[in-house]
Length: 114
Length: 113
Image (cartoon, rainbow over all chains, first blue to last red; front, side):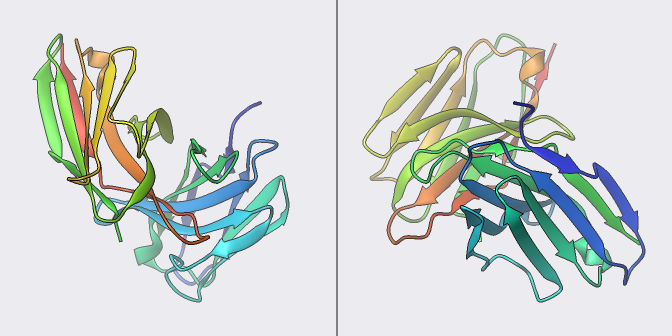
């Protein structure tokens, strides 16, 4: 398996534009996580899915952020409209099961909103 | 909010020396994990220790867990320049049906050749 695949690796966009980040988890993994990493706040859990169903989205900063998982092999994180403070590295991770689960991370998407 | 907090924030040592990083957390946990992140890359899992375990080894890594103090330590022995990275502890909070793997802000380890 190629691991968790994220695209794009880098995204530069203007304030107010819509941004869509994509993730392909490892096949067979039931859990998918979206994290955001910044120097100030570290690694924050935004939302996670179990079997394609959103379980906990309490980390989503505000209504401008939304995430979907239409099937077991694809998830998106959308920001609309984007703001400069959304600039961060966004990671997707997947894991096989709930307890005692090692999370496998993608390489991340570095988002810059200017 | 962060469940785990690593200490120190940064650590610089010479190749061959041991490196010790600490993690403190706030609520009861099922497991504690340590991850490594090289600059510009994703996190990579290193080791997992269960709440009923006190010590675990994996190669040059040694992890301890003290649930009474809500703390863990990661020891890297005989460090190498290639160990230079950020190290994070992650905890999954016990209780309820919700599962959250939350990370601290990490310790930046620099191993000088």
